[in-house]
Length: 99
Image (tube, rainbow, N blue to C red; front, side):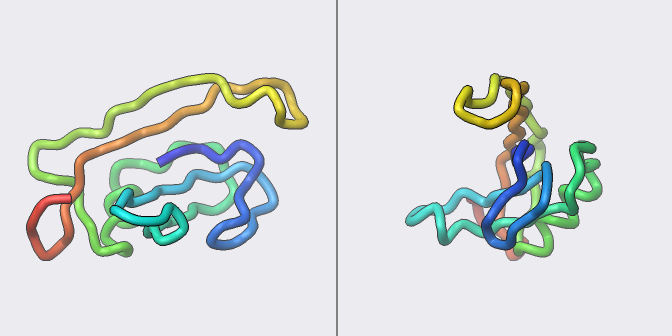
């Protein structure tokens, strides 16, 4: 899950910053399941993240917790460099198994 500081073009264009949740699966990045929240910099709650994962057919694995990292965004953006926030958690398909 990451904050897209300038919006996104996939799967649909947003006019401003938004959070996106990706499920990393083998294969092309373009094939990863993705959920995009409305244009906002507010961090989605744990409940909102669970709903987004469920809509993609996944759930946070038993005992797993969200881990956060911060970095600075790339200098080539047309705005001042910002902090980039990324979150990750171990997940599994809703039907069981590991992912």
